[in-house]
Amino acid sequence: MKSITKGLLGAATLTFVVIGLSACQTTEDGGPNHADRVVAAQDATKPEHDGTSAKPAKDAPAKPKYTTGQTQAIASATDYLDNMAFSRSGLVDQLKYEQFSVADATFAVDHIKVDWNKQAAASATDYLDTQSFSHGGLVDQLKYEGFTPKQAEYGVTQAGL
Image (cartoon, rainbow, N blue to C red; front, top):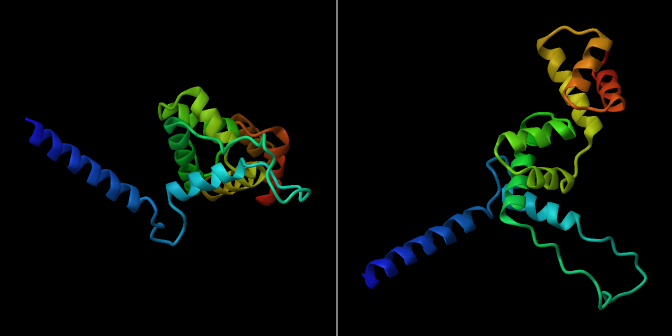
């Protein structure tokens, strides 16, 4: 029984290592994969260096340690944004739909860098590629999807309406 357990444990460890190593690869298009984006998101939360001291303060906070749920939610959020445009609230809702907790979904969206104006413009352009809208109608649609009134107006204007 012990040798079977050792064999299974060894196989599981090897599988984990192989998966972990493959997560360090880039995607087919040369872009970063999940792990790279999560590291980038974690690095983005580091405080900026103000140039006043060459050494970190003794009381400097440790690098944030994310939970597995937070890390997975960040990876999922970046995947969604790579494929389609979302408002902040729309992305949180999508992550909740994917059964991430409200806390993890909100954490993820708050810990990635997103230009919500560009997301609104991309969403407006996507709508105009498939449907007809008036300026006001498209602004209302974007607001319905969770964009702020300013973001919606910016997006529709950038889309040419």
